[in-house]
Amino acid sequence: MSHAPTDLDATAPRGTRPLTVDDFDFALPPELIAQHPAPQRSASRLLDGRQWPPVDRIFRDLPTLLAPGDLLVFNDTQVIKARLFGHKPTGGRLELLVERVLADGDVVAHMKVSKKPAPGTVLHMAPDAHGQPAFTATVLGRWPDADGALFRLRFSDDPYALMARHGHVPLPPYIEHADTAEDERRYQTIFARYPGAVAAPTAALHFDEAVLAALHARGVQRASVTLHVGAGTFQPVRVRDVRQHRMHHEWYRIPAETLQALAQTRRSGGRVLAVGTTTVRTLESWAATGRTEGETDLFIIPGFRFQVVDLMITNFHLPRSTLMMLVSAFAGYDHVMALYRHAIAQRYRFFSYGDAMLLQRAPQ
Image 1 (tube, rainbow, N blue to C red):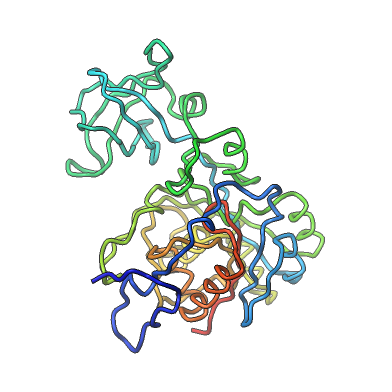
Image 2: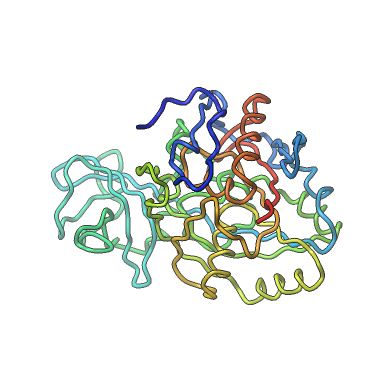
């Protein structure tokens, strides 16, 4: 039975008993959930958690913590304006959250509506003040199969162009305001390149040109991967035994130049620093399968053996989430829980628009 959390002093997983979702629970004061980004990207706080006790820093300090020959790997996915509003022919309102655009141009989306429309229904999207739609979306069926939770639709024009013109920034559910011009700018990394994500790789939101210039001057190398973050990143873990949880699938790609940079870093004795959990999952998916492009549903929990990543930058994550499990696997369960206690006591800001932490891989 689930318990109501009171603080972060949860019992650490002991021996070989199965991990439960309760092991990753903690009470977070709601006022620590960041609703807006810091005034400047690199002005966010950085909890240096490579050791104990941790050190409270500012993100712009990061270059001084790295060494020449270290390699930073970013996720260069671009957040699309994936939230669209419309109505059914009967007038009932609906909301789409586009999960991905398929190779043939069809769209796969979550649909929020009172009664699910049947295949063949033509949805009227982005209506103006007089109810006239800017475009239509025809329901083709469910996805990935007849019982799938998502819908496959065909837009009346290029999906990316329609989303850019009529879509809204897909802010996470815990951000309470409607999207604004500030969100369009700040819920996007400065090196976003390939459209396809419906959630930002948030650890990378702290990087600005000044930090990148300082990293370059210090001799820190840069490389990129692409993983299109899906809405499943916010999917709760609904099973008590976390081993039974099934991760959502996300598409990733690692270019040849990044593979070369990783090999060179290893040869020269440098460290690989993954910027964000999506980069960690991409690199470790490649290490586990040998595939440089494809779908991954890699689920990382304590006991996982990391093969690529030495250091990680990440934001502070939701209780009971797969991301809490990943960082606990990387840096050690007890250590991460202690860092979260420290972060709450020191009033760090949490989640997508919040502060960051620097972690080192625990001995395996």
